[in-house]
Each structure stands twice: as structure tokens, then as C-alpha cells.
Image (cartoon, rainbow, N blue to C red):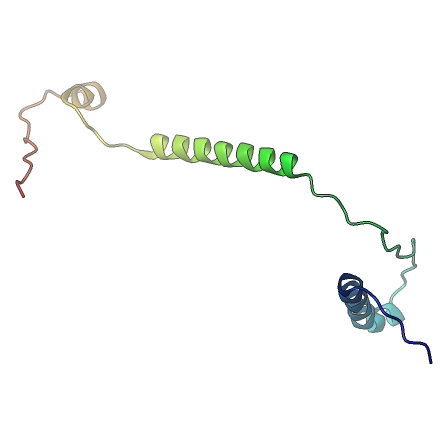
Length: 104
């Protein structure tokens, strides 16, 4: 009996492959599917493109922040000054309630 020894990463990978194969085995027995390509284990890890990922994350974050700020500004219908009352409501201002700040 020959015992094979794999690195931990390869062992985890093979366990996942076996689990997927065992889960899909009953479905494959009754389906009309064919294997197009055989599984090929890559000889090297897939490189991570950190610069591209950071650039995309920055662009996505800036775009989402800009979009959310536009939506919030567009949805805000607060009247803040006397000029806005006369402009939007087309009525004269009768009086203004002052904003008192409480001490303490």
C-alpha cells in the first residue's frame, strides 16, 4: 500500500473536489449532460492583482458616495430661508421664528 502525501492546500482542494463530485454524482446519473473538459489542477497559485482591485474599490466607493449624495440632495425638500418660501410657494413671508440656542 502506497501512502500519498500532499501539501495542506492541495489536500483541502482535493477534499473540495471529492465533496463536489459526491454531491453531484446522483444528479449526473439521471441527467443528459456530458463532460466538456477535464479538471486541470493549476501548477501555480492564481496571482492577485492588488493595484487593480484597489483602483476598482476606490472608483466604486467614490461612485457610490457621489450617487448617494445626489439622491439625498434631490430628495431633500426642506425650506431653509425666506427667499425659498417666496420662490417656491409664491406667497409672502409673514414672520420668522428665530432659532434660539439654549445655553449649557
